[in-house]
Every structure is written in structure tokens, then in C-alpha cells.
Amino acid sequence: MLALPAAAQEYPALHSVTGVAADDVLNIRSTPSASAEVIGTLAPDQTGVEVILADESGKWGQVNSGEQSGWAALRYLSPEPQNDWRMMHGQALDCFGTEPFWSLTLDEASYLRTQDEPVTPFVLMARQPATGRPGKSGFHAVGRIDSALPIPDIRSISGTLTARHCTDGMSDRVYGISIDLLQFRKAGQLDVLTGCCSLVP
Image 1 (cartoon, rainbow, N blue to C red):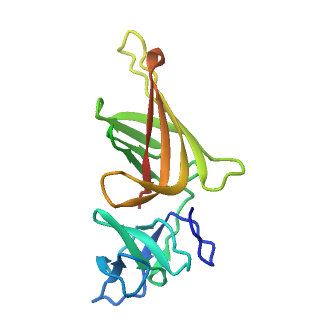
Image 2: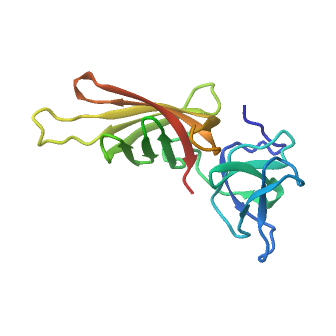
Image 3: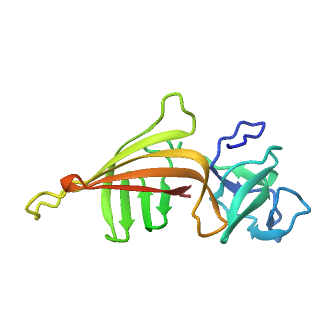
């Protein structure tokens, strides 16, 4: 599961690059080692860097770079103030899935996009951590009613968010939150979707 360093920092979490000279960069390496291949870099003033997890030593954090993930030294990454992504009014999330392709912005004003429908707006009604289950949360959102339809198209989405390793199946990127999403439509239609989420800076 997710490794925690000595400071008990919870992951995933947003970080800022710190302690790097203005004319230098923070290297992202293929493995958590100073001798590993450099596969990307972070600017010395970069903010909103999502650290997915820490290695067992607590010295390296896994981050994404392009279409792959790598490791950056945590001593040069400072946690940013942020709201708990598991809570109502918490950190916004960008979620998505493949085959079928869909995306969800999970915030107070949420938007679901699917292959069938470009944008469906929802209002987040609840987001609550699971009782006795660290790193797990549930949410519920309702869509607007289209009064022009003979039968109002009342929709809702519900789902669970879990802090665990997640991949999109199409790249070597990793994500720290997985999502199981249910979309309820009129006439008893139910869409069951799964995917990954990242924190919105």
C-alpha cells in the first residue's frame, strides 16, 4: 500500500519545489536513487507537484513526468497547505477512466464527460470519509433537472475514492487515488465506471 515517511505525511499530496537554486532543476529519476537515470525535471519554483507516495526510506517521492512516473528527492519538496480530499469542501479532484473514456471534475460544481455526452453538470451534495477506513471516502452529487423534457431527466452520481496505486492502462503514469463511480439515470439505467484521480493544484 502507501508508504509513509517518518513525518507521517499522508499521500497523495501537493508539494512545492524548495531549496533548489534558481538556475538549477530538481531531477526526477527512474528509481529512488541518486544514481538512477534522469527521466524528467521540476523547475526550482514549481508548485502543485503531486507526490503519489513515498518510498520505504521516506526520502523519495513518486511523481509523474510526461507519460511516465519517477522519483524526486523529498528533501526538495515541501508540502503545500491543502484541504483533505476525502472531505466536503476538500481538495478538488480530476478523475478519468478509459474504455469507455470518461472524465469527472469532482468539486462543489462537478462535471462529468463521457463518450456519449460531452458535459453533464452535477452539484456535490456530500463527500465523507469512510468510518474506520483511513484513505477511503464516499461522495454523492445530483444533476440539474431539464424541465423541457416530458419526463424530467433527474440524474445522480455516487462513488468511492480510495488512496491506492492506480494506473490508466495506457501510459506508465501512476495515480494515488482510485475511483469507483456509479451514474444513475432515468428509467433505471445505471453506468458503472472505474478509474483514477489526481489532486487539482
